[in-house]
Length: 312
Image 1 (cartoon, rainbow, N blue to C red):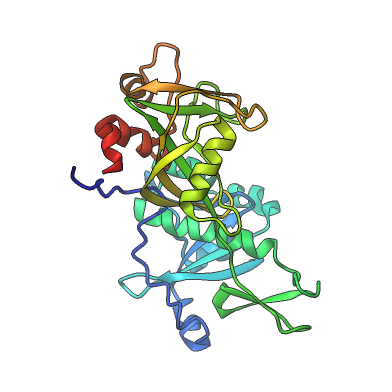
Image 2: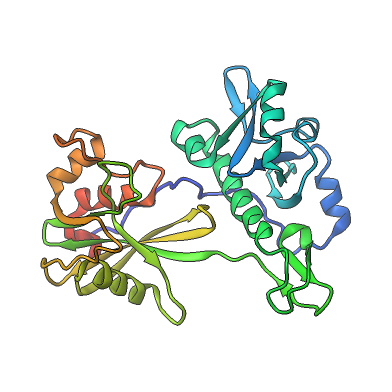
């Protein structure tokens, strides 16, 4: 069996140089701020500039200044042309004033991706900006001594002057797995899902746990299914708020379900043919799979194409 194909996932695939070894070079960072592309977020939404019939997530310095005084600015990276990309947070209270100026729209990141409002290459910068600025917003005080912290290393660290602690951005690892039993896969619903949407199981990796152990534990806890073989598929940055989705397939050793009704509204085994209908939006009950921006869509699609071949 040939290896699983490489896929292009939303919010992944950045071509930027993150300049991780040069973030303390104040002169370099200052030079990159000249004529930079600024990814401006206000609350949960980004400010996009209108460019004729299209939109641009990377605002010019002049456009960024019109969105209001920044609460936080952080380096995202440098593109192939040498242009700096910066994340810039402004107060949500500015949203009405931004809209009133004309020339801008303010829209959340999921909608930007679903509607294809910006080129795929910019989605990674937006995802980085959202996760990084979310971390800054919630780490203004030192977890060691409780005193205020200040940004350092071009926004990739916060320092505490009181106790000298250094704090770095965090990413929460989350496994998302499609359990497979013969020619069926396990799909589930949570109450927060849109009506009719069915997806793969998912859960956070716990301390001291490997990816494979997390996959088996979550499958057992949520659906009562002991897991066998685990096959890694792909990973996806998921900035809602700051997670990494680690996609896997897991072999179900039984098809007997025992659903955790606190975590799940429902779960059931689904055939390949029904999965095709879910993916194409042609299910007679109007059920559907997550959209292509989510790794769950690609897990289900790959199962339809490969079946148990996903385990090699």
